[in-house]
Image 1 (cartoon, rainbow, N blue to C red):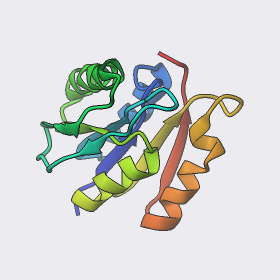
Image 2: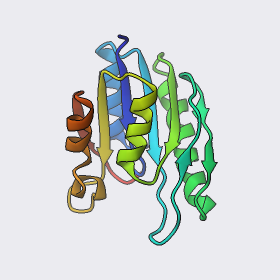
Image 3: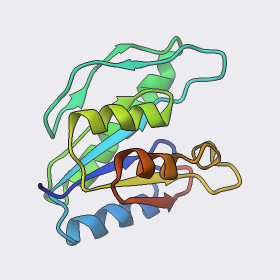
Image 4: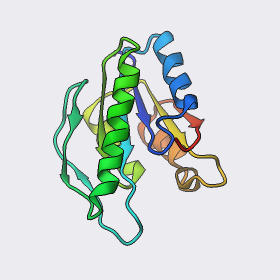
Length: 155
């Protein structure tokens, strides 16, 4: 299997900590990067469902946008900026805007592709919802792949 890396991030996607983690993986032989950006939806708003599959280098469309399309658009913009930045490293970079539930977003990507590892980028522990819901451990237990947590700053 190629050494594909799944990067899950949203608000920290543009941080230097995430960029350093990606550079390390590419230098260590990472052959493809797939980025999942779970959409952030204000509480009380609807969810997002992801449709279809796409090869590396493409962005998957979202069938049903959140009622607040600005949240989806922000996630899509972050994804495109990251694809542009990491594409300069010389490996294929693809990705998708994922479900508002980060575990579902990861599960969707894991169902479509095989990954050698998962990198979960979160805000610091004191404010990270993803750490409060134990996302890294849940992903590791469910998919039996190495999971690394990178703490980044809100970019």
